[in-house]
Amino acid sequence: MKKKEKPIKKKSLTQKNGLYGWFFLAPFVVGLIVFYLPVIVESFRFSVNDLSLSTGGYSLEFVGLKSYRYALFTHATFVRDTLSLIGDLLLQSPAIIIFSLFIAVLLNQEMPARGLFRGIFFLPVIIATGVVLKADMSNAMLESMNNAGGIETNTTVTAAGGFDISNIRVMLENMYISSGAVDYVVGLVNNIYSVVNYSGVQIILFLSGLQSISPAVYEAAKVEGANGWDSFWKITVPILSPIILVNTVYTVIDGFTRSDNPIMALIDDVAFNKMNYSASSAMAWLYLAMVLVILGGVALISRRFTFYQERD
Amino acid sequence: MKEKTVSNRKRRFFSSEILWAIFRFVLLVGLSYVILSPFLKKISMMFMSPADLRNPTVWMVPQEPTLDNIRRVIRYGGYLPAFLHSLIISTLCAVLQTFTCCMAGYGLAKFKFKGNTFLFIMAVFTIVIPPQTLYLALYTRFRYFDFFHLLALLGIGPVKLVETVLPSTLLSATALGLKNGLYIFVMRQFFKGVPQELNEAAWVDGCNPIAAFFRIMLPVAKPMLISIFLLSFAWQWTDTFYSGLFNRSMLVLPMILTKVTAIAAESISNGTMMSSVMQNTAVVMIILPLFLFYLVFQRKLIQGIERSGIVG
Figure 1 (cartoon, helix red, strand yellow):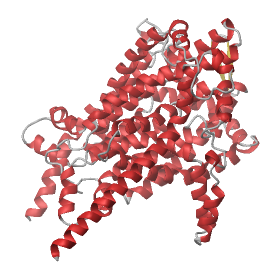
Figure 2 (cartoon, rainbow over the protein chains, first blue to last red):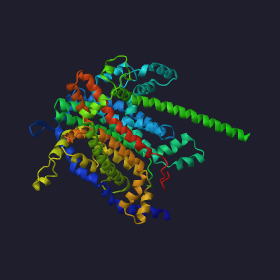
Figure 3 (cartoon, chains in turn yellow, orange):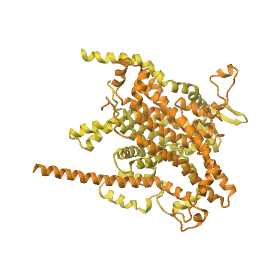
Figure 4 (cartoon, rainbow over the protein chains, first blue to last red):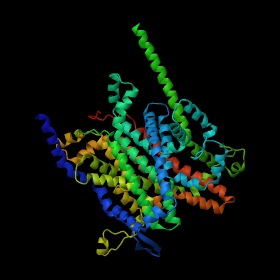
């Protein structure tokens, strides 16, 4: 009897205060109504209309799903490139999550020069914004210096800094690890530059998630006889799991919307070089729908593994 | 006998600690090199004189170091006013964004009301849609700003908001700036991890939810808020998308890149070489303040801020 009473009381209080939620969301809701939704609707209208730019604005002519049919069936590379991109990202995303969690745990430990290391691992966030990329695009001098030696920063290179990766491959294969797994690891090692550079935001978020775990919890676990491995899996991972979910979703979204990925480049190219805004919008919307489906999948899977400090 | 095993265990413990520290250090130094190597080249080029650039025996360390490149960026690129503008805009936007996203995240995490799930999905939706997709629609929205034809009815007509700081400010104040969906998501996940008991205790004691948010929840969320502020500041600092779209007339730091390149190309002999040197110098000068800014702020990201009453 007593047990039953409590949740009812809590529910009524939370319900009573439920409307305060609108207060906290007010700025966002206003923004959605005034700025965002009209813009979204506009962009969607571009995709079902033929848009022609004229002096002082643009005119639209309704064409229905023509642009969508063009993107799906007529365009030579859109569908193929999109599918191969999905494959690549599904392989890369887990690596980014694991790597950034690992680095965040390292950067959270006491050590000399910790601040400097944290600063260095913040740089990928800046690199990801594209300002560096923009500067490097037409950079003759840097190219010649890159050729002169040092680590290669492009992703297609097969041997990083003169280190022969085939030795590792042979070693791993001799250990009877399946060639699929070997390919995956070798691919990651080759792409260490991009894995590191795509992990910037994730590291920062994990790091601040780690800050909010009270050291007292770890002490208690240690007194009870847990080692580092136990407390990582039994304390750190569950408490961080909400942040792991954000990072997973963000990694997927970032992978799909990064300006250096082939589809985004294609969408930009169709819009600004080929001047076909309608086809570009249609592609963007199709692409978006697909990303949303994938995110839905991620959300369904992660729901089972995410732990919230809630009683219900 | 017993004492001996204890001391043995202790010794083993210490040696494994040291091994781990060494391993960690080597790993972090290696990864730092991966991140820093492109910057090291840029920094060395920053101090090179034309003679060094032409000399094939010079690698990384200039023989005749010079500050001319930096002086040129300051003088021709308009570095100082751009720096000031960027500082103002980035601080303004980052403060607004951190605050509104924190509020929105809190509202989504801690209040049950109709539309909660829908608003959450909208927040994620805003990061999934790449801003490039909305380029044209966003521009026209702020170029001919009107609110459901209300302004036109009042006789003011559509207002031109571009070429002012208003579009960026308004978008930030309504949690719709760059990557704001991510911040809302992060804050929601973070507050979901904070026990609802903390809120209920305050509510039962007669504190209304708004006061409880400011007095209890904001202090708890401090590490997360710092990270979001840093991310938001960094993105605003290097943003070319919104500044190029809304406010071309105001010189901000990323714009000096194109400016110095153009100047170097037309005014100095062997222009292509100088323009890439100028670009590198400008990139370093854009990123360096951000790096220092992070180094100062990361000190606040220290585990051990006692979160009274919150134990996992």
